[in-house]
Picture (tube, rainbow, N blue to C red):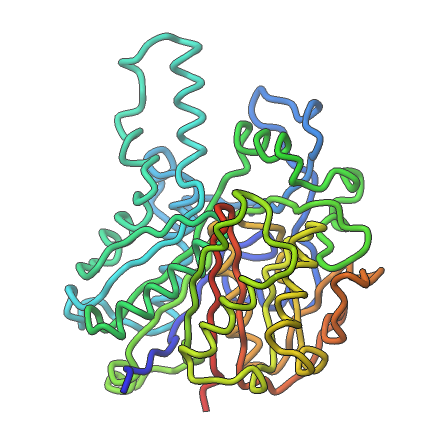
Length: 417
């Protein structure tokens, strides 16, 4: 019999709030975190086709971390450190009472330390002074910088991994945390998804890819509109989500408060296209089916889906086809929402922040709205999508996360009884 794994702590840094309570309140109010981007220092936005994003505004490092980290740690890792600290505090997990080699860290990141990377390469080319490159440049831009920093910060000496599968990174991090505890390699895993890639080069790259919304530069709050006829691309965001996963026996031993059970995980590759999903949604359906099978749950038992739903024409429609292919008639009775309508697409953080939203929904029975869902698109319409808060005593939630590189992940969460 497989070990049961539960969630005992949550943390979040997002465009609609820093901290779980702020995030949940804003989400249920349907508040948009999408705003006009601030120009980067000495770099105007005039030439960018898209000029909006989901920024974590008023993030002052010194409020949360020692001031010296502002220069030595990239923004995405700062987000991860803040979210994980909140999650550990929320879980009442005192590391001094834990066997450190039984506590792991697994981080999902799509881009990594791009802010410092771009800053330093620009300085190097302008100055032609290689000796002036920041001494922390290499350990800061490597994708595993956040996981290493979290382990040092919290004294976790168990498995330390970084998962980088683009937009599904955060969900895969949780899935791998589940697998790690099931395998007996750890009792606790700090699972985090983080990204902060609203930088001149990365943003220009996504604009050139023509993946971003461009029609709502003057009305940013209307731009992220999953499943809506007027959607014209996703909106980039930034942030981090953190979850504390524990074996049930470990959580019970320390009398921890339990949010939900992580019951299943599915992972596939479509082997189709680097950025475009298969339009029939077949592999998305397979991924969800694998997660449900892993959880020992049937499609008829699914109550709620936190959709990947980035607000692209092809992606949203393909996901709904995948949901219908999997759930058949049950698809008309499942509540579906899209967290990205509120905060944009946070890349590697998306799956983890979506997981936080899913767990909160299971606990409260209130499922946040999919804002800007005003003109339902017949190609991706489901009765359970709503621009209003929906109340449902959901027992089983399914989370989808699909990434560039044809990479899919799905997670199943069960309400803790």
